[in-house]
Length: 634
Image (cartoon, rainbow, N blue to C red):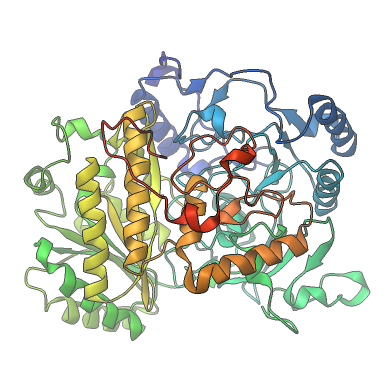
C-alpha cells in the first residue's frame, strides 16, 4: 500500500532540464509549463506514490539461486563498471513523467511489487549491450531492454517476468550521431527523446522538422520500434525509419538495410539512411514489437520545414459521427489531408484543461452527457459532440486551395464550424496541436492525468477501417463497456489513409484497487469483443499482451507459432524479454506464464500442476465487474 502524500505544490522539486548531463529532461522552452504540470499532478495526489518492498531483496529471476545471482551481478559490474549496475532493493517510487521509474510500472495495475526487476544495467555502447547479452546467456538470466521506459499506459519500464534485469539503454546511449540536411535524415541512439532531437536539429539551423507524438519525452527509437505514431505527414514512425543496428539474443550484432554493406574506409555506409531495404529479405519488421533483438541505432527520415495551418472543426450532434467518418475517408484516401489528423469527443476538451473531474461533476458513474454539454458551451468549442483536429501544408496558395476543399466537404454536415488558432485564447489546446503538427514536441497532453486523483491511464488501441459502419461498431463496443464499468469514455481516432487507430484512454486512480480491477476487466472485455468483430489491438499493456497475441488466431495460431519458431531459433536460451508482446521462448511455454485472464501474479514460475494447453487458455478468459469478489484477472 502506498503511503499517504504529504507533498504540496509549494514543495514540488523542479523538473530536470535537458542538458548534456541530463539527456532525458525537458527543453528549456517548456520548463515553466512542465513545472506547472508537475505541480498540478502533485496537488492531485492523495498518496505519495512510494510503495514499500516485500520479502528478501532483490527479487530473483525465476530459477536463479541467490548465490548464483550475486556471482553473476559481480561479473556484470566488472564488465560495465560497478556504477552502471544498480540492484533494485529500494522502495518503489512512481515518480513523475520526466522522473519515471525504471524499476516497475509507474501506472501499476497490480501491486507494484509484482512487476519489478532484480537490477538495472546501463550499457554505454553497442559493444557493452552485446556483452550484457552474452552475460545473460551464460547465467540464463532474463533481460528486459528499454529505450527510456516512458511507454506509460502500456507498462512503462516494468518487466513481464518478475526479477528480470532491466537493460536501460537510454541513460548512457543518448547521442544524435548524425543529422544530414541534404538527405533529410538522422541517426540516433535509444536515449534520444523527441525533446532532445528537436533541440539538436534546431542547433544546426537546418530547416528540418521531426515528427513528435502527443508527448515529447519518449524515445524516438523506442517509439518507432513499438510502431507508434505522430501527426505530421511523417506520422508513421516505423515507415519513416531507415536502417537498424541490432544486438541479437546471442550477442551477435547486425546492421539492416544498406548498413549491412561496409562503407569505404571502415565508415558507415553512405546510403544507410537513404534506402530502407538493402538486398535480400527485409528483416527490420521482426525487430519491432518483438523480443528478437535489441536495437541500438536507428536511421530516421526528417521532413523539410514548410508552411502549415492547423484548425478545428466542431460538429453539434452525436449522430453526426458516421457522416464525419465518410468525409474524413474521402479526404484521406484522396490525400487532400496530408498529416495524421484526430477526431476526438468533446469530453476531451474538458480533460485537457488539467482540471480534476470533480470540478465538472461530483456524482457517481459516468459524467452525464448534459453536464459535458453544459461545460463545453462555455468553452471556445461550444456545445458540440465531436471535434476534428487537422493540418494542411505547403505554400500559402496550396494551403488555401486545400482548405477550400476541406471546408466544402465538411460543410455537408449541418452545423460544422471551423475554428482557427487566432479564434481561441493563447492557452487553448489548439495551439498545442499547432506545435505538434509542425514538428515541435509538447507536454500539454499530460493534463489528462488530473482527471482522477492519483491519475494513471491504460490505453486500448484497436485498428478499424475508415468506414462508417466499422467506426460505429467499434465506438459502440467501447461506449457500452465503459458504461458497464463506470469509466468516462475518452475516444480519439488517429486517422491514416485507409485505417484508424482508435486510442481509448482509461483514466483511473492508481491508489483505488477497485478502479484498477474495473479498468483491467473493462479492457479485457473490449479486447475480446472487438477481436470477435474483427478489430485487433495494434499495441497493448505488458499484462494484456498474451490475450491480444491470441486474438490473432487465424489458422490455429499460425502467426504466433511462426513468432515462436523465430524466437527459439534466435534466442535458444530464452533470455531476451520473455513474454514481450505475447512471444514466449520454449523454456517458458506451457508453464502457465501466459496471462489470458486467469492468473494475477507474475511472482514465481508456476508449478507443473498449473499447466494447461494453449487451446484451454484461449477459451478460458473471463471478465469481472465492479464489486465482484474477483480481481479482474480471474
